[in-house]
Each structure stands twice: as C-alpha cells, then as structure tokens.
Length: 441
Image 1: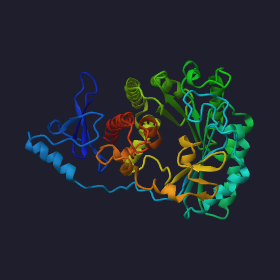
Image 2: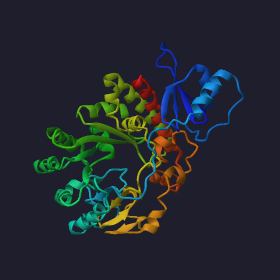
Image 3: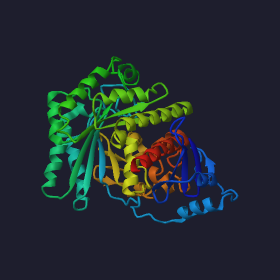
Image 4: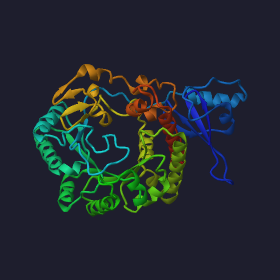
C-alpha cells in the first residue's frame, strides 16, 4: 500500500491483486469525504508513511492540471456535518459492580484479580443509587444516559445490577430520559437466573474472550490456573438462547505478541453468531513487529468479511463500523472518548474517575458520591485533538486524539502521543477508507 498526502488530502494506491487495475482512493480529512483521484493527481502528492503526522512540504510543481484538481478539492470547504465539540455534562457512567474476579487475566488493568489493589470487593447499593440519581437529575429533557456494568466480574453480584436497573426505571416515572444498559463479562457465570435477569433488562452484553481454548487459556485462565474457555463457551450458548430478548451481544478479544491469531479468532467467533466482534491490540503491548502482524491480520479479516457478506459483514467488526458511521453521519470527533466531559467511572467505594484504567490511583480521583471536583475536571474540557497536539494529523477527526491512558502507559504522559497507537489507528482507518469507497460505489 502506497500512501501520499497533499495538505488535507491523503491518497492510497491500491492494487487489488496481481492482475487487477490500480485504484487511487483519497480522503479529505477536513470534510470527511472519500473519493477517487487520478494517477496524475496521486503523483502530485508527497509520499508519507503511517508514522507521518505532519503535513509534508509541497514539492515542485510537475503536472499543472493535476495539481489544480487536487488543490481545488483541498480548498473546498464543504463540510455539512457535525463538529465534535463536547461540552461538560455527564451522559454515561461505568460502575465497578465488583472489584473481584473469578479469572486471572495476564493483561488485566485491575491488577489481575479485578481488585485494583483495593480490599473493597463490591459496591454499596445504598450509596450507589443516590449517586446515580445525582447524575440523572442533571440530564436535559429526553437525553440518553448509559450505565455500563463492569468489574472484576460484575455477574458475581448480579443482584446489584438488577437493583440499579429497577431503581433507574423508577426514576423514569418522574423524569423523561432514556437509559441504556450494558455489561462486560467473561460469561462463565451465566445461570438460568442470570439469563432471566439479562433478558429482563434488554441489556447490551460484551463477552471477553481471546480465542479458542488453546489461545484463550494462555491469557485468561481461572484463578486456580485451570481452563476458563469451556465455561465462557457455555455462557455464549446461554446468551444465544436469549439473543432476541437482550439489546445485543458481542465478543471482544485482546491481541498481544503471544496471541496474534486474529484470523483464526475471527473464524472461531463467527460460530457463536454474535452481533459484533472486537479485536483490540493490548494497551500494554509495545512490540512493533506484533503491531505490524496485527494490522496485517485485521486487513485479512476485513477482506474475508467483505467477500463473505459485503458491508454488512464488514461492519460487524466494531472498529470498521465506527469509522463507517462517522463518515456516513459526517461526524467529526475531537475527543477519542468523553473522559471527564460526558463520561465518568465509579469504583466500588463510590469514588469517581475519568477512566476505568486509572481506578485505584488517588491522584486520579475527581469526585466522591455526588460531589465532583470541578477544578480537576476542568483540565479535561479542551478537545483531545488540542490537548494531544494532533492538529496536523490527517486522521484526527476519525481518531479524536487517541486514548489518554494508552498514551500515558507508553510515554508517561496522557497528552504525549504513543506512536504505536497513532500508527495502529491510521492503519485501521486506511483499511476502512478502501472498503468505504468500494461500498459506496
């Protein structure tokens, strides 16, 4: 894949196979437009790589007509979509229902046992309900409010999940808002009782699973070191029985240098017929060759999905669906996530953070109960594109500045970009652009 750039436009030279014609797909990063350009226009642009974030210097004029075409498109300010500004107003919270887990995943952000190093094992319902009411009382009329249940393993305390659900429905009787519920689980604890509760809630479920038994048990063993995969497979079979009664369910995998079987994992996940799949590159992984292989295999599963079922099948892969949606909706994003702006995290002590991955760090606490520290939250209010100095990157309006936690894990600072993350994100966006152009033809 050859990549070139001219100011706000990047273009990709694509050779579908050894006999097919070359195509030149271009992306206007300011206007979120995807189009085809001529070979002559492509050659007027400057070669770049995935590591290039700044707009290159414009080289000497070669083909005046081609340069005029590309310059004209670059100067076209035809953005009719929505800007990505987020003003403060909490519309989503994640709750650590439990800070204990029955697995011991090697890459766990919660200390490997779900505890975050804290002896408090589960939330106090008595403290959590009024805390939720505080956030819901701030909502505007008819707004959506997302509540996500995580752990540890949240199904170790299913009654708390159900209590919160019932309480929020009661609040709906006096306030017009739209609650959305989601839950992330390893699916090893789905009994008939749990299944009934999940059906009642119409909840959206994410099942964490890294592949088949041979792959998954390496990184996600039970606490006693035994296999967890068969239990998760059984849980997925239980979810299949209530598929029509819940909001949705998907399967999320994490890739590391020890687990780079994305293609085989994709094939394996398809056997469970989930609504979507997610293939994440581990936030702690710093291996360039592993990332190169990850992007190669993501391209392979994109091709497999598109060949099998076109856009619909491709968009079951979560990362590609996100970029398709942003391009279709003409929605710029200026923040990779709403941390500290529209989103907050609640731990088992009812302490408030901006991100699930900083739970347990005292310096990262931005509130307790219904009291928020607005002085601490103020530093999150600028767009991440600005805070992370991404203004010259062509991918900025589809990336939104990147993940602050991953940046910090790799560079030591939330607002100093991790180059691996930037390259990985650009690579996934480029794959999306190629299939987006093909789909919209």
